[in-house]
Length: 332
Image (cartoon, rainbow, N blue to C red; front, side, top):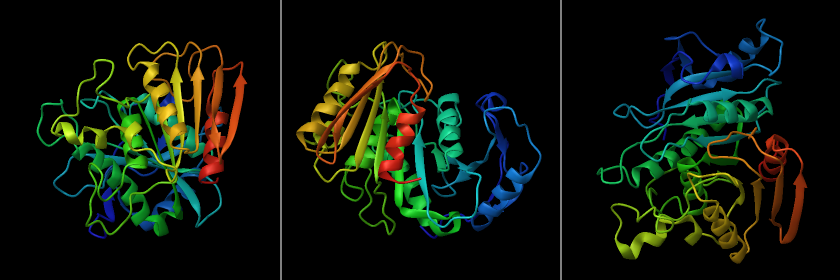
């Protein structure tokens, strides 16, 4: 992992409506930035005069290489405001797009990343190899790429002031599946695992936003490139055990893209495995929402440290519930 580039050229903020989200560039396009200097660069950026109307501005560095010089996929880094720390928790966010499209800076990814950054988390939003099921080299490389985003954060934990034991992974739709695979399957022997990796890709928490969890159900088909006997290794609901990191599942009842029964199945699998999980169903929410979905409220069930939990809200917003989950699992 030390071969990862420590120096990169800052790219222009792009893709999402950054003005609406109050996301600003931490460095000028083309400016060379050393990873160890990112905290100081962020402090300087937050210290500049900026818009004071809500939401609070956040700063990011775009298009950081993390997979090697021969790969076009990059990551965006959101660094929070506040005093210098050596123990910040971090979150890796994985975009959706049906495994064939999407981008780390699309609106949902940028919105969730910015909200978590405002709450004090170092956030990485990553790209990964895209392509149809029939394209060779996509599976399980997409899972491996997401694992390597976690490894990048952990490899640079000291420079970024991150606690390497307090890293979570999150994702929406296809990204929800990838987040579950990173969190629940073994980072050395599971799909996309690397037995030779010197830096761990293990995480302490998983947020699954309306993710696909079983390709053999609901018309999704089998995982390409894997023998029938190996299909279970690619199904998150088959990877659950009591030692898994805690999982937060978010899904809307009006989702017509990913059947909510997929999240029902995931919650049942985690319960059967006696793993810690929380399942929030948002009444009336469609597919592809951020932490501020349209809806009529939500209901939460699950098991935390062996105890049943149940709560509800008459508001659909998920910010507080998500931040509470992260505070319990990786701190704040």
